[in-house]
Amino acid sequence: MKLQGKHIVVGITGSIAAYKAATLIRCLIKEGAEVQVVITPAGKEFITPLTLSTLTNKPVVSEFFDRRDGSWHSHVSLGLWADLMLIAPASAATLGKMAHGIADNMLLTTYLSMKAPTWVAPAMDLDMYAHEATQNNLSILQQRGVHIIDAGSGFLASGLEGKGRMAEPEHIAGEVIRYFESGAMPLATPLSKAPLQGKRVLITAGPTYEAIDAVRFIGNHSSGRMGYALASACKAQGAEVTLVSGPTALPDPLGVKTVRVTSALEMLQASEAIFPKSEIAIFSAAVADYRPTTPVEGKMKRETLGQELQIQLTKNPDIAATLGAKKEARQLLVGFALETSPNEEEALRKMRVKGMDMMVLNSLSDQGAGFGGTTNKIALLSATEVVHFPLKSKEEVAQDIVQAIIKRLERV
Ligand code: PMT
Image (cartoon, rainbow, N blue to C red; front, top):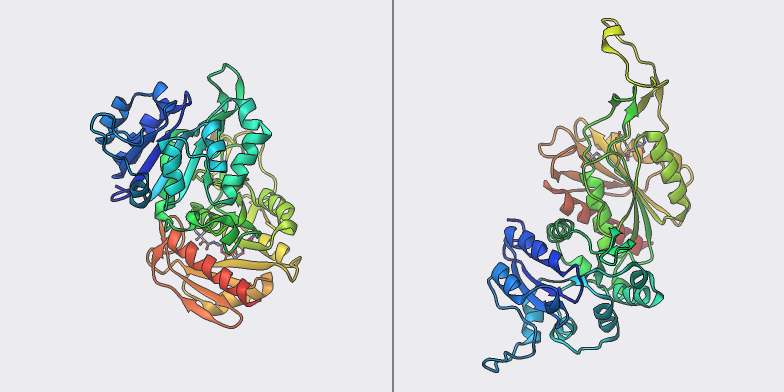
């Protein structure tokens, strides 16, 4: 129950995607969240309050007062009650009114009274979505700290195909869970006040796969979790993040530009393109040190291979060191060192030879640290200090690293 104790106001507006709100609510409630629906008059044309109140076990709020007994629905108390306001679907009309403070229904007054972070999942026809007015409204809201769950592409209710589909309920619920797991507060911060606002961050994450033939590869146990948590933590502090990721099973972090690659050479190429436009680079990927010199085309046939198989390997480029050699004074570089045991000397040596400013040391001998799992135990090293941290979730570790980066930037 990852959302146990969380209060979520789900706002529903007049869009055909309102039917998806029912699934979204189910996903949130299944994880323990308490959901209060606030629906616009147009929203009720698309999904009935009866369905929604049955799902949430609460009366749906739509009017300023109850027509039966005249009791007042307080948008102010909803604003105080909620841990998150999630408007899904958010129509073009509601986005426009939110951007310009037009409070002509209960959903909009609730938004204007909201003390918790607000997220919107736009849903509309492709031309409406692409229109300058809608895009301007979205950008106004984003500047104010409203989080946008980008619309997807596909078949639209109009019969046309393009961008404007509301993100899938399971995806939105997953992002809500990740948001609360990552410490929750940061996305509420208006972008203008976020410490990494205006900073562009490059992060490498995950393993690389080096092809032996069409089906086999050399790889390692990196899940990508550490790097993805760093991407979300940087984004939460206002940074523009590009994540260059090796193969992982993780979804793209919310609001992060994710470039998927397979091999070390591809990771280098993608990182080299982004590095000159970055103020911060974090190298958390577990890059394969060697690749088969000549991958076999097609699948090698087991029957035709001898008892022993020799594969010639070529050393891969060191991505951190290659970019470290090009580092400019305006850039801050953070490397990782994965050691068998906590070897600070070795981490400091890697920091120097790779041109890093800071190093995150994690060791395979520490229980719960390193590859795969959801936790890590790190020491943060720089030329002047070493700070040790206890075992924490990778989301918390990422926040510790990002706070150290922010402190370091403040000192410069
Ligand atoms: O993905 P997870 O399952 O969450 O696991 C996280 C992690 C264990 C992979 C992560 O915390 C970590 O330690 N990443 C670095 C792993 C590693 O390759 O360490 P290293 O000591 O071999 O490399 C030192 C540094 O050089 C690293 O910043 C690495 O990204 C970089 N490097 C290494 C080799 C190479 N060819 N190119 C590189 O950029």
